[in-house]
Image 1 (cartoon, rainbow, N blue to C red):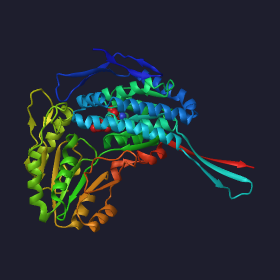
Image 2: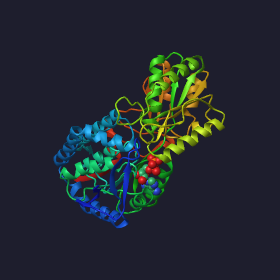
Image 3: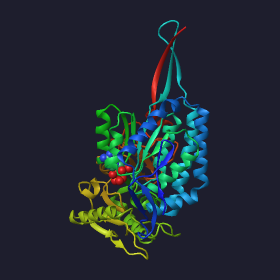
Image 4: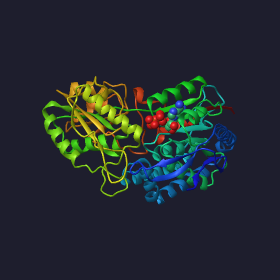
Length: 478
Ligand code: ADP
């Protein structure tokens, strides 16, 4: 099996170490071998990004549009093939994998256009015979560090704006999903972007990632991952005055009021809690349900849960693929145990499932009789485990929804405009969903949260420019 190498200064470079990328739906299936960058190679990637940065910052916007548009076109044309690769290495269903790849293509096309729309301002000076121009410039070499759960969409929504606004990139993908990262790099490499503008270094975060965080030539770090690693990124970057942007955990509430459309509420909860095997930072892990609809909601929800097909991500008809790996599965099982010990009632699911092929299969779990003080409701599990919290009215629902260290996404199912309006206004979350799942967002509008979920300017859409550009104010005496 040929090894997939790192991409540094316009060359594919091998290394001594390599790891096998394992299919979580069938652990006998090796997706590929991927080279692990050593310390020197990381340094070479930063050298290359640094050397290319002045030239790329001055490159024409038409040129940047053309590169990004071509990258988006190729991703979209190959969505079936790349979606299959993604689902094979990550374990989300094929429909989800193909959808994610299509999203990545759309993001590149969107930011191709943003390269052309990078307008500034002309402001009259307070002094006679002077004019003031405010413009947006590239920040410099940027490190992009990404997690495994959206192995092409998250890299796309960081890499595309970075390149569109004239920054060079060193990309460090997650250890578990190098396949999508490598395929994306291959497309970017063949688009003809100049040498050094884009570099890929694969390897363990604690080594490769930390080298990037601490290299003074890296002027910004965009990170998505766990809250603990986010703190390391923040510490390293603030210590050397580099800018940073963090997207981290969630413990997202979905409030179900008694005036909701029950079918829709059940579907929102099912999608939000369990699709993508619950491995989304926007997953609805806390279902906050008004007392008078509680029993009807739980009964309908459990019935739907029991109809879910859990199996090989690549097989048609699968609703829920496997958990990503043994470590995550162990963590999910530990939380199921913790929930029971805390006195919550495990109504259904949570157990490991045997399938034809060896994989990390788990039946989605639902706890009832839970409250916000339990660890299962305070800590992000990142698996197919959801809890129901019973409340007596909207006041209590609002309080419970906000009673968390996180603040990424929050949803409500209700037919009352008044309740929806109040929820939108009072939710301490970056994204609010009315009668829609907490997960599943558009690509042309801001994405991000409050409290410990996010730090720094928003990602995606027009707001992405705030992180990927720096402002220059120029005075001209006439
Ligand atoms: P997850 O639980 O999603 O794997 P992590 O925060 O561990 O979250 O990983 C997200 C990304 O951060 C991965 O690419 C990982 O390799 C990287 N990473 C992990 N630890 C560090 C670190 N100490 N410094 C920089 N990057 C890291």
